[in-house]
Length: 96
Picture (cartoon, rainbow, N blue to C red):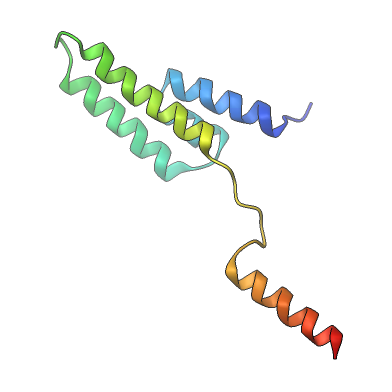
């Protein structure tokens, strides 16, 4: 069964809540931002180990990762500036 766009987004959000960056890397194929979120999460977790209230600090990173996974929308192919210029020049050629 193929996953719909909505189910992929939900899976990315849930996996990013569990491990920051996992949804970006595994589901959305955004390795760079996923590694950044994971690294920040690990560094904050290590830096705040044993500090009272550190759970709240770590939760912020998990939520940040989940929100990033939720608001991300993949750009459609052929929607850049170059493709618009090509489409415009093709339509002008057809008119003449």
